[in-house]
Image (tube, rainbow, N blue to C red; front, top):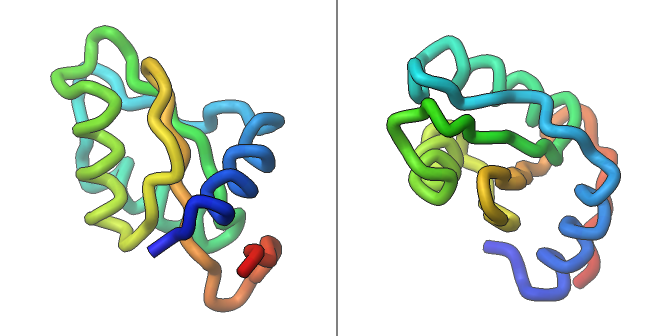
Length: 97
């Protein structure tokens, strides 16, 4: 579980990130979940965009994906959300205590 200071740190790091995944009219499927899982292992922090055609809202998509890939939802704003998961082999982010 992330503390408020850690969330603030991750939000700051995510500011410069572009959304690299989109949840569209197909919703959340196994392929998207697998790709996000692999990308979190490589990057630890990602931004995802939910399109208007998606059957789910950003908060629903964030919670569902976070549970599926064992990640933390850092923030949900509008149609975008940020996920974080500490990498096992590729640690890049040192969280504040």
